[in-house]
Image (tube, rainbow, N blue to C red):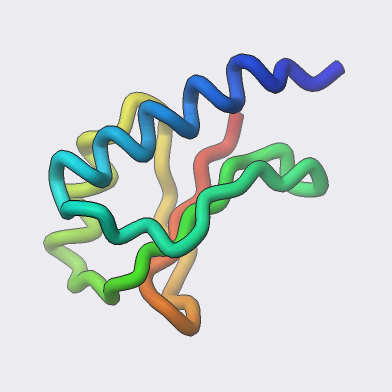
Length: 78
């Protein structure tokens, strides 16, 4: 069974970190039931140093997932 309360809480924590570190630049933030992970795409493209710095700030383990059409993509496996 999926614990949506935990997913929503984690999404709120992710959004809080991004807003504090980068400003409001989240293009999409959604749970993928297929991958059992939260996927996020920013509206900006980050360089390697900024990606590393941002990943270190998240409460959940974050992996860089490449560049999307709108910006850098990250995945958070739950």
